[in-house]
Length: 189
Image (cartoon, rainbow, N blue to C red; front, side):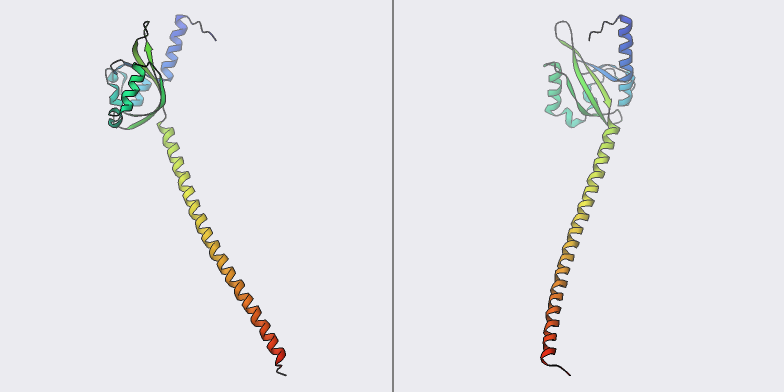
């Protein structure tokens, strides 16, 4: 499918994308050069506050200090590869935000990286709900396991009791038979 958009259609297309998607653009020094309202709001900033903020400010210290962080940027800036995954970032107030993100390098005519664009969806609520649901399922599973173990123990006790009743019944039948035979041998009347 080939889209031949005139300049007005392109502008409408990009405006619609920027309205619906959270977008942030970094320069090769890993500093914000643009953010739309949706991305800024998700991170707890205004778009103006984000200008020149370094990418590492949105990351937790452990990640910034890791080899993964350096590899992430090397992949974008040197290998010129896109990155897509669920990521954990830090909002302005220090709270966790979970994003489903796509980062991709923007190349100039000479195939040199000039910017990195990130498009993201805030999935924090969905992940929180999923975590809560998984916890409830695990708790239910543990409760059912305990009930099952308790039930098995009760069945085992009941089985032992039935064996004892059967043994007593067999002994009683034997004793009754012996009594009957004794009565026949030694009648009272």
